[in-house]
Image 1: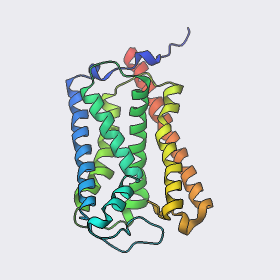
Image 2: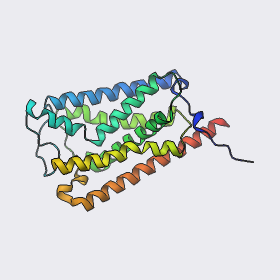
Image 3: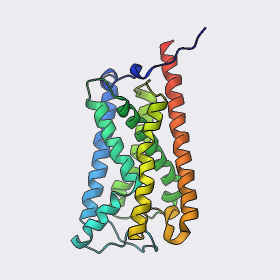
Image 4: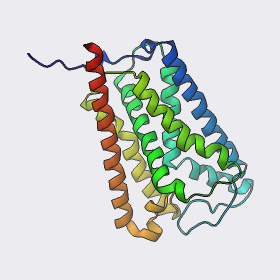
Length: 240
């Protein structure tokens, strides 16, 4: 008996998710937009508590409104913000869209789920245990690093949508995280500042930083393949 594969056109569009599933994604979208908007507003107003800044790291902007452009540029450079923005956009789309999804939207959903997974795991394992929260951090930090990653991954497993993840979709899903790498390196070469300690070229040098980036990208690819594999398995299971 020949094997049956799910073509890209069999991908379940958002309109087929059902009311409860769309409500879940709507809740995720609202939560993520709130966390991101609050982060931007608090950053612009210089509301986050200031501490000692290690050499080569973000956070040494001028206080008050004069430092707002630098702080906002740093905020929009974090992988955390890229992943949260993507989750907000994808969740909004899944909650509201009535028509069929294109291959790019399928890739964006896979990419958003992967990126927010990386955000949550890296924070839980390498950043969170060493970060002291204070002030407004208690509001925005748990939303962006814990609540949104857990909610998006659980929604993916529980509600879908399912099907349509082929090789082309997987390759498209890598575009945004791969693009972040040269962006952050070029930005760092100009400003001599970096968002994360394991990427701090000023202290670690390019060899160690590029090695850390390589491990992160490999981990991201593994996450994508795991999500794609589970999606195919769940799709086939639903068809029998």
